Image 1 (tube, rainbow, N blue to C red):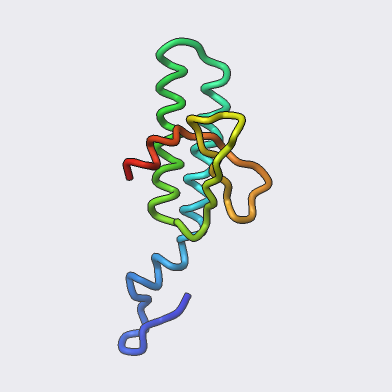
Image 2 (image 1 turned 45 degrees about the horizontal axis):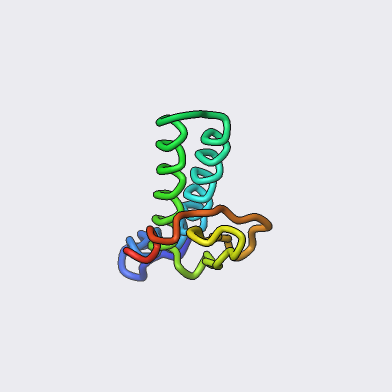
Length: 101
């Protein structure tokens, strides 16, 4: 962790940069977990789990745009596929959610 030259303490921006990858992994992990849970549920609980997944993917896109790719998936026309830059997997999210933001 870099230190400021004045008092030796890290600056707020330095701290943010140091934890950025950890925070991005947390958001993707949250989305993956919500997706797994949603697949095992039915009814309104399933819809809420998918909403949590979509919100986590949206936050990941808004806070770390350089770390994600959003691709159109022609097999699912109303959804986009969001992939981490280094990830071997992707998660689907409603396309209109990303158009609004």
